[in-house]
Image (cartoon, rainbow, N blue to C red; front, side, top):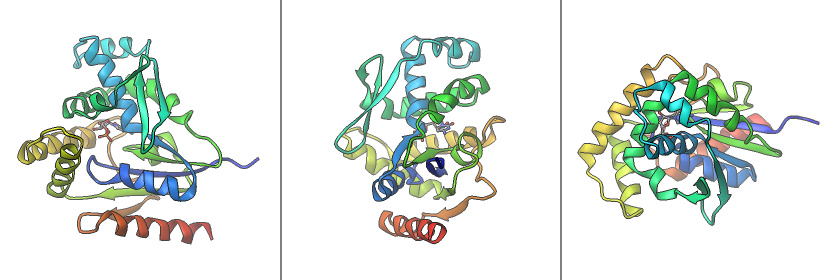
Amino acid sequence: MSEPYVITIDGASGSGKGSLALRIARHLGFHLLDSGAIYRLAALQALRQKVDLNNEVAVVEVLQDFDIHFEEGEELSIPYLDDEDVSSQIRLESTGDAASIIAQYPAVRARLLERQQQCLRAPGLVADGRDMGTVVFPNAHIKFFLYASPEIRAQRRHKQLISMGISANIAQLQAEISDRDERDRNRSESPLLPAPDALVVDSSLLDLDQVTQLMISHIDEVTT
Ligand code: C5P
């Protein structure tokens, strides 16, 4: 039997990869892996257990007993930590920030690797994150890397948070995005970098429909 088809979409936060991954998964009838949600769930677990996020050993320790699952919602899948729906908590900037701190640790990444790879199911998977095409699914059939300027990403994030009823300040968001980019790009383990065989797409001046179209055209080209 042939392996399920894998499409990876990597990029910084606010590059649009989450919305694009959802659209492409729906278009193809594939499963979806939001790997950032897994890092955010791990961060929430660490925050709830009040461990020092700067202590790699302590963070890995609380992940020994890490009970998460996802359930299909109307729009997106709903993340559960210890059987509690934590959709809003994991989307907070403070959780994203904590996620990017613990995501620097090799032992944390190793702990979460298999959990991500287990999401691979027929007929295929669209996986979004930072290292989907480089580490988690290095043999993916199609790889994308999304780029967008920090200013545009801060504006998009602001709009997204407001629509979720979470108040936010654009200047502060941009500063947080830059800090997080810096950490994601400069860590030694799985830094935010395009895979050599990824198609790099700059979405700064394109809207969601235009990027979706561009990506679907590329998928059609490769698969026909
Ligand atoms: O994509 P999202 O903003 O939800 O991810 C939260 C954080 O989790 C990122 O800033 C990044 O540090 C980390 N992450 C990661 N590798 C992934 C997905 C997310 O390091 N594959």
